[in-house]
Image 1 (cartoon, rainbow, N blue to C red):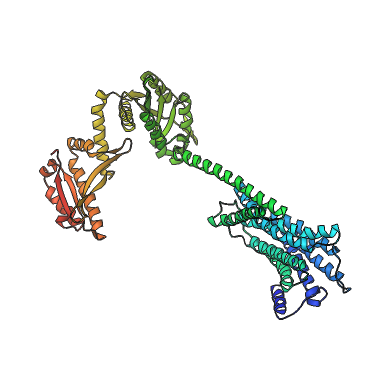
Image 2: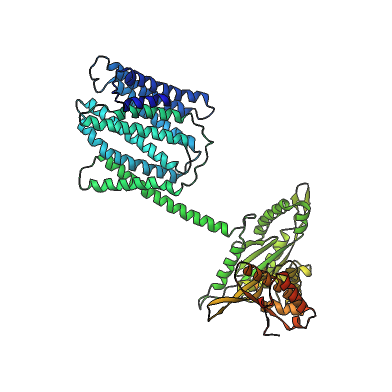
Length: 608
């Protein structure tokens, strides 16, 4: 059929002048349009889903084709058919069927349309329709003559075109985020039909009837819409947020509506055009308010997700520090009593065995169940968070030591019932360390440290809970830290920060100082002044120095390979110099990374 249309266009360009009763321009075009409509309807009976769209669209096309056929029959006598005539009934019947088909096609393309998408479509459609109405209705009034029925029929065409254009432009805005082959062909066909109607309307207003463009536009539009139904469609999906280009059409048509209203203040503009333009701007206001609400909801949701543990639904470590930092940042008024808080650090006993025996899915199920049990043991207003792994924390506002111990015992008691795992049950225990603010600490990291130390003592003493006591916990804490530092060195958990040293004469950074830090899993980053003395006492200093030398020279080699002639400075202690084999260690590490001796600067620490 495309070849037939192409041949017809070639005839038109070659000077062929069609008439209503000619073999090609009359009967041939009528048969062509009727066949295209019938093929569209036939598509509805051969497809498995979405049959309503091609059947309704095909019915609308056949209604238009029938109008052309009736016009051909009415023109057999040689005279001009009256206005209105029987052909107008079928032409006007095209519009309601086309409305239904367009709406069904939009619904078939997407499974769900959110409110913003509908509003974007309404803005685009009403804005475009207002522009069309502003120009089309002037031509109608010039062309309108005769009785009231003739005037009504003449007005029906531009009104039908305006609302059809509203649906097409609105649908294009709705579906801007995806590639929609069938929709694009239907939209192009309807647009071509509307342009043909508008062209015919303007020609009639100046006393001209028929044109080569109209002779081509109407059969071409029908063929495009029929072809669209034979394209392969994809499974309907939920419509995603439009791409940035999807906002262009609603934006331009909204501006056009605003221009219509401004022009209407200085000269006459048809009332329908003004009403459509005002409606478009009103929908813009609704769309803006909807966007603001959606943005606020999105911000709140992102905030909630950022402070929520995805597994248990409890607060996470970020939320814990927000609450703690807010507590310590608060400065009570002079007549206000000082704030108090008890921090309970909970470490599960036996959880690792569950993970090892039944797998991580079973462990996750236990953690989810724990959240409910722990919540039931706390009072209203208490904060429960999952710190990470099998560690939890509870914050009790305005609580003293006695109340904190009572709540800790309730938390342990909540674990007494077994956890059902497939065909077996598992039992858990807990060790809880308690620290009080501001008695034990005046900042977040120190409070967590104190509670962690108390929890470790509770675990060693096989007691349910323990309050932080500085005199008792200092020695035990140092032993525990030494053991954790040994593990951190073995597993390369230390990190090196590099402090640049600038040459003031050249302005070039030629040397960096390697500074070791310990990111402790419970209390955060520990400075060297706090853990290096402990390393000296525990006999770990040599291992720390070896690790820092290796890491610093590895990084230095990387810089030099990339073209930066850098040297690195490493602090060493007196014990490193006194230890046997230190010189050989330095030589071996330099040779391993293929670095010259001047790539390394050794500095003796101030405390040596």
